[in-house]
Structures are given as C-alpha cells and as structure tokens.
Image (cartoon, rainbow, N blue to C red):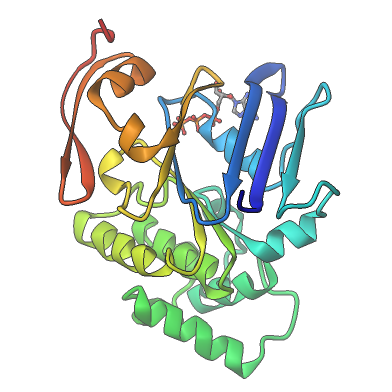
Length: 263
Ligand SMILES: Nc1ncnc2c1ncn2[C@@H]1O[C@H](COP(=O)(O)OP(=O)(O)OP(=O)(O)O)[C@@H](O)[C@H]1O
C-alpha cells in the first residue's frame, strides 16, 4: 500500500458551538488526487482547515500527515502543503503588491517578513507569466478585482512547488476562459503534486482527479474512485436533488437538476 499524505481518524470538529464535522475517517495516499463535493454548509471548508492543521479534532480524533504518526508541526505542514482559499484575499496588507503576494508563497506567510532572493523573484514572475498575469505584478493586491486576486493567490500557492496542493473553490468568481486556463495549468502540475480540490461544480473535476469525497451534513456520504461515484444516483442522494451526471471527454457535467429531493 502506498504511503499516506494525510490520514484522518474519527475526527469530530466544532466551530463555536456548532458540531460541523462528525466521525470523519479518510486517507489520502500518494498518487491520488481528490475532489471534495457537497452542498453549502456541509463542512467542506472546515474539512480543509482540518487538513491544513488550522482546526483540530476533539474527543480523541486525530489527523496525521506525510506517513508519520507524530505531530508534524504547523511549519512542516505549511512547507509541504499549498493552500488556496478565498479567505487569504482578505488578510493581506493594503500596500502589498501582487508580486509580493506571490513571493510570500516561498515563506508560507501572509505578507513578506524575510528577504526575497533574486531567484525567488524570477520564479514568482515566471509563475505569474504562466498564469497570464504578468501585468499585475506591480499593482496593489488590495486594488485587484476578485478574479485577478484569485489568480495571484493561485500563483502564490504554486510558486513553492508544494507536495500537496489544497484548493478551496479556486475557480469561484473566475470567468470561463480564465477558469479553463487555470485548470489547464493545474492539470500540468498535477503530474508533479497531489491535489485536493473543493468545488460545487463537477465540470471542474479534471481527468487527473482520481477520487471523490462526498460530504453531507458534516459526515462522509461516500468516498472512493471517481468513476464509481460521479453517477446520477450517487450525486442525487448526496446533494438532495434529482441530478443527471454525464461524462464528456474526461470531464463530468450536471446536465439537469430538479431541486425537489433525490426520490
Ligand atoms: N467560525 C464559525 N463559527 C460557528 N459556525 C461556523 C463557523 N464557520 C463555519 N461555521 C458553520 O459550519 C458549517 C460548515 O461551514 P463550512 O464553511 O465548512 O461549509 P462549506 O461546505 O464550506 O460551505 P459552502 O459551500 O457554503 O462554502 C456551516 O453551518 C457554518 O455556518
């Protein structure tokens, strides 16, 4: 059996007084790429925060990283796991430039507290070029449109070549050409890193994604191989609607949905 990247054992997670996740058992092994799908409020972002070490389980639940049963340490996790989340968009200083945001990816920090080497600046510029945003480099991050800022954060996550990249709805707010450009660059990277990709839109699930985790009301509804789970019946039950799922050229689409329950 291949080594695990993340193993979650019996994790129950509270946020405030809300029990958001209950009894989660899940393992991500090397060579797998996962999509995480579920309705609003089912606990996807909470689950991502658990995987990134930002939230901890209670009642004896545990999370382990990189095939070790020791506490990996937040710094160790940040070094090897890239995270793209809309929340980062709010946390940056008003005067920081887009290039500086990308450079901060080398230090897994929000903001720049260490001196940036010339080679790091070149890599950050190359990453922006690759994502089609070199023209944003000297703009204030704070002034960028939502979609522009999202692409800068993608460059930030990719620049330090993480072993595992966690993306929480990375394409939300992107126009279709930008989304497809991003997915294309992600598909190329997926050969060299593992992915966990949270989305509401199954058409974003790339051929490189091998497994799907369906969350429902804070519990795992189903987890397994993509081909087994991306079906109309499973989706209808997981999302509480009558959905029609179709595959086209390695991508999946919901071509019809009646929001009146699965049955
Ligand atoms: N800081 C918090 N304090 C209390 N409850 C919270 C907090 N953050 C989230 N929740 C609640 O936890 C539940 C799950 O939230 P979460 O953001 O994980 O869901 P999600 O599946 O990512 O939703 P969406 O698809 O809408 O982004 C929601 O009911 C939410 O209201």
